[in-house]
Length: 382
Image (cartoon, rainbow, N blue to C red; front, side, top):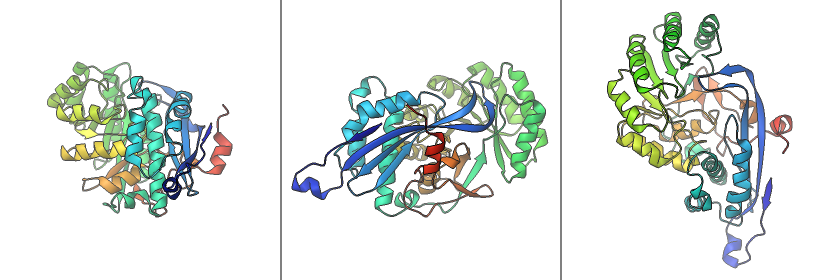
């Protein structure tokens, strides 16, 4: 849907850039193979998109990456959030973020659908800011690192047989990755452990291996499995419990010899603050497409760094945004993001790798612009 607005008429208003038009649409992109984790079996990935056009002639693009519910997100933007931005100065990102967050939608969604919509708009505003400054976003935000490494999470699915699983994980290592992640959280934890052992035995000892539970265990199961994961030299155990269970995660962090990672289903700075304050997370996986965009991601990353917790973002953004954010802010000696290549063909400038190392972009913006060919190919009719 398209939202448009006439420019204000005062002399001061005419001298400032203004948001003139906001467009939304969804791309439904097929995956290269059917995949399954502990929650879902999927064949497609939805990429809802928002484009903000300004009186300067610039276009800023924001987006998310989700399995389902794209219609709800775009409707919240079209009907409730976009009208608050029309005619406003796009440079006042903090002021606009507050206006969107404290809009009447605050009553019905400080997380999930409406917060994702807010985040998409915030991403578009930051893309505009970087384009206006004629810098890539990572340089605009400080340019702290010249290199960003990746670990590969595009494999290890629960619908694979053990032979398929081992071959899949081994292939990722042969392609150049020194760290890979696989799924657990099946019906029988004993089978999960056996699958992890098979993969660990097949991979070189130098290769890091992480596991992702996708929220399926209780505290007892996670604690028991953590002991066995430690013996298998597992780098971290991801989302072992319900993502809102701060108390359970705090107890698990005290018991587990394996670091606990979470964050892809934690939607705001206050929620992350609760996890950090309770020592309920070891590795912070804040996702810019789940929290309120770049503005809130920066706040959360700052809090994580202050608590000496590494940030390893969840790749709902298909790496396009997190390459900028981690390069600009990470306090790690080896800043790292998650490699997830779903839908890279959607973008005008898909993330570039040399082996497993990101080649940081040099063109202005947040690398979020959608290729016209992708829109023609995958746009979903409303």
